[in-house]
Length: 94
Image 1 (cartoon, rainbow, N blue to C red):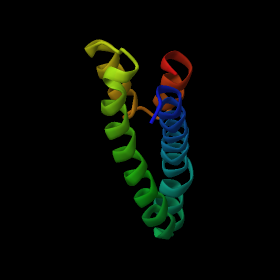
Image 2: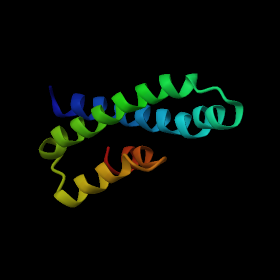
Image 3: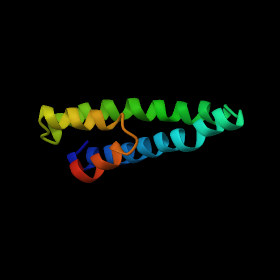
Image 4: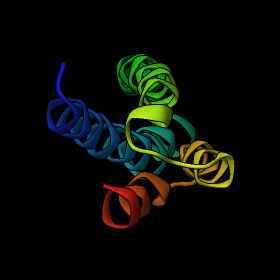
């Protein structure tokens, strides 16, 4: 894969991971705890889990390709844990 293709792939994974995290926190969790409907957490949670793992793996694969230093990689990986973090990574690093 070329550098630009890898960057675009990570950009999409980042956006999807951030969106799934927000849906999980703002839609699925309230449905589970306030309306006793846990079904959405199962589906959105599974999708978010897969996207989270893909985000971490692709970020680590891009580490050398994008010439990130260890501090940048640490920030990018830390942002995967924050609700709006992947969107920050998209604007700052991609």
